[in-house]
Amino acid sequence: MNKSELVETVAARTGSSPAEARRHVEAALHAITEAVAVGDRVSLVGFGTFEGADRPARTARDPRSGDAVDVPAARVARFRAGAAFRDAVAAGEAPDVPAVVTAPPPARRGATADDVVGDADADAAGGTRSGGGRTSHPRADQVAGVATAAPEKDPKASGKASARSTKDAKKDAKKDAKKAGRKAKAHDAAGRAAKKSRKAAASGT
Image 1 (tube, rainbow, N blue to C red):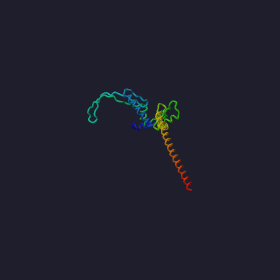
Image 2: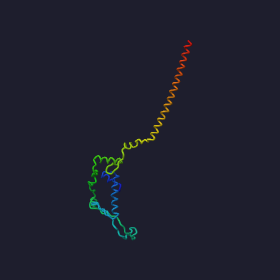
Image 3: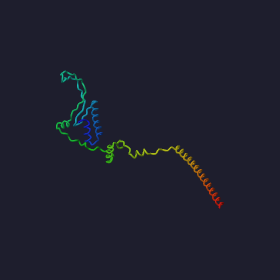
Image 4: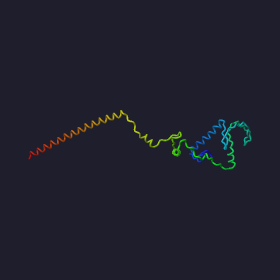
């Protein structure tokens, strides 16, 4: 079993996502390494103890040539298996999974069942909820509301636009009046011509 397989096993046992399981595994390994590196001993009851030890300088022999080889002093990492670990290996049987591993994660204080389900849905969708120090993604309608919000109008620009509209309206009114005048003159001329034609017809008879 390598680290990736260990992460997959932890995710399957705990019901968490592979990404979350990887964070937990990496955090545990880092904590053990950090403690032993600074001289502390990490004792995990039933599993074993990690600690550092000073190895003095010594003389060894090269297994190929048989020549003596000086090995300098060094500080090395050591692991001593715990009783439960040794017993399981000796029996050749995997122990039962602890209940704390398969138990569901505790709900946040004041959270309801809907909140817990909502957190799971949010994690599956790649987002997070706002409770418990998390941040939430905006809803689609919120984004749309921001995107379609009407910009504020400039009072000066509105006044200029209104003035232009009034001026254009006056011009249009003058044009309409001129057109109406020309039509009236044409109508009067047509009326006078028709009257002359009738008079001429009457005189001829």
